[in-house]
Image (cartoon, rainbow, N blue to C red):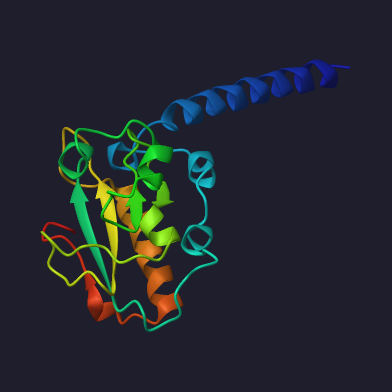
Length: 182
């Protein structure tokens, strides 16, 4: 007869432990990966890299020959700052093909194709190390307090460059990272 109260106590303890675990994971979900643990549910909210790269107007392999990654905050890249992510990806004056967000401007690691990518237009080569006509340029937005990307941004950028290199047959030696990229 004492079996039923014991099962009730175990069930109640399990329910309390699971609820506490959910609360802890959700509070960690807004923490950047470089600051510690993060929730995988936040990762699954992001679009897959393959979906971001694909557009119906994509040029065939051979038209893109290299990939250049650069880091800058929103103030140094665009006149003052971005008002919204939809504005960022639809502005013609953004001189890159992809934006990797920092957790402040958008979800940490979120990859946005820009209007230049969607229309398959080259970027201008001013202030960059490589010639812009055949270069896919990726802008990694850094935080205002730090000039380095988060670990999550690095991983998402790596996934993006791997997918682009595979899709367009770009040799990995033709990837240009910033000098302080680890």
